[in-house]
Image 1 (spheres, rainbow, N blue to C red):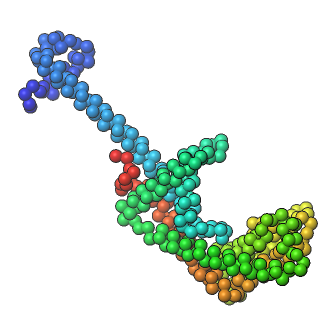
Image 2: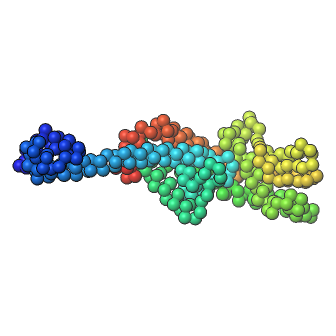
Image 3: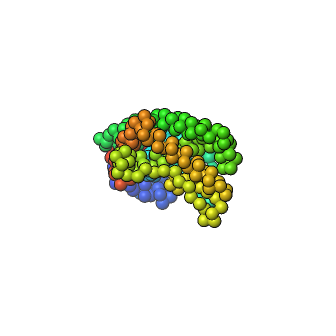
Length: 330
């Protein structure tokens, strides 16, 4: 024990008496310890208690913040896993655009309220984007730290980028085919009539998208090879009447591309052009693009399944607990 320091028993007596409001002179009398020595020992003990309380408080804050960190990572992982699924329509962007749009969203519900829609202004959106980016980097660090690999993410990125490129080319070809069929109807002024009757600003784009959607549904259902072999029926654009029969809907599945009032003949004409476009794309040189797209979508689906399995909260939580990233509270 250093000179001037009190033994534990003596310090305990001083602390007990001082907490009772005893004067230093009386403490000296009752304990036999010099009042100046007792005072220094007590003040030193008091400072140590303050530091310990601070350390304890920091531990409590760190524990709470770490729980928030885990929940944020799990929320982000779930949002990414869901959004990285193959889109239900061929309106698919490349990975750069995908992440840019995804990170702009309020994925952690920072600015959402139960009784109203999310309220995001420009600053909030930028703030959310950066937070989402940092958390995604954190997520990758935790998984790599556990020996996990992100090969599925790279495969998903490549397949999505390739799909977006093929879709862009196929869309251009589809637009050309639709335009050529409409040119055959130039004398009847069909394009203008469709525009006026349907109120669609750009009927060519709508017919192009209808044809692509039909092809896309078969790709999603992995039917393409069976269609080429004549074993499966191809999805086509159809005309459906509303319950009252006053409107004719040009549809692919549950999605409507044109609505005509009291003009089933015109609706069927639009349907015919769309289906002829599908037929041309399926049997012409463009069919190789569709085969290529089918292969990319298979890769993308498989990669998405692996990502969803890896990012499942049940598996993710223990990985985060066993590892550390730069954003983990100290």
